[in-house]
Image: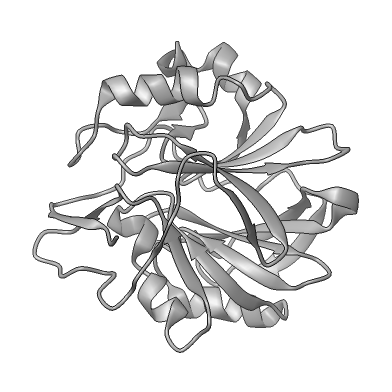
Length: 253
């Protein structure tokens, strides 16, 4: 089932967005998108999983690139633009595109998908309730793409990376978070939160399909089982820890 499409004038305005680097263990050169040093950190068994951010400059969207060090087949999460820059990043680090995953369907998270997967053997994954939200007057950004459906609790193995899907509506009906277990690490999990949760902020609910009630339920029930030592990698702004947000983020209360 494809995404439902909604025409709207849209601009991403998350709370306390900042273009800051990640707390990291290794340096990965320079981003073509934002001009800031980009970083990677370990997230799996024996440090095999690498994660890097490609900052999409015009919308300040975090596009996350995830790969297993020994496999070098990358998952791209939320390619919100600059597909040529994302491709250059993959080539620079000798990575093959394995899959694209959308945390939700807002244009600043999906704008680069079609060009990125063109003529590649890479599938696109998203929740079946995902609403595609374009800028006013724009055509669908996903024409010609038949996405594979993700459901709550799905266990994905993409490029050798194991991810768990959590359906977290509120910012949009088909919003999801993606979870990686950090086996044997001080940080228990790494969660890609999309626009559900930011550092000292949460996603807006005034777009097509948004719901404040559902957002609160996602924050306080659907991710409640995760420990405080969960690293949160959001769709905009710097990373944070789930425990810090529970303690200090008034919008999670």
